[in-house]
Length: 160
Image (tube, rainbow, N blue to C red; front, side, top):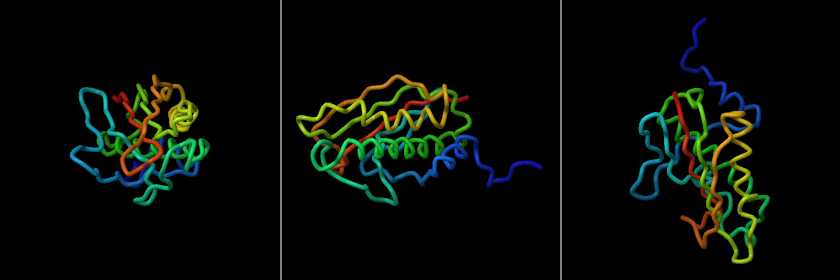
């Protein structure tokens, strides 16, 4: 029996096993596109942790937002990035490698746990892609992010 349009990719099946499903791609809030392909790489724009069209929290990590919550929001950013990647390449099973993750954490001046927050995105990508989810990464503390989001994540992925 051939797979129909309702066929679910192995990557999406792993997301489902984690209790997650790909959302629709969030509409850009400025003059950019959610993702772009060049050669065999797809680059996402910074993804915020939108859930059902809204942010689950706003503010700075280490003040209004806990590091634990921010880690979960970083994982949500990664899911949203995967939705943007799928919209460009059609099937997440085509991803052969997560190349790099760049995570931004809106941080209280005394907060230094940015790497732990962005682990939320990195760990999710590892769970979903296995060894192919292992990636280079930057975790950067910033004063403020768009819409007062606590986190933002960009992903670069290679695909076949």
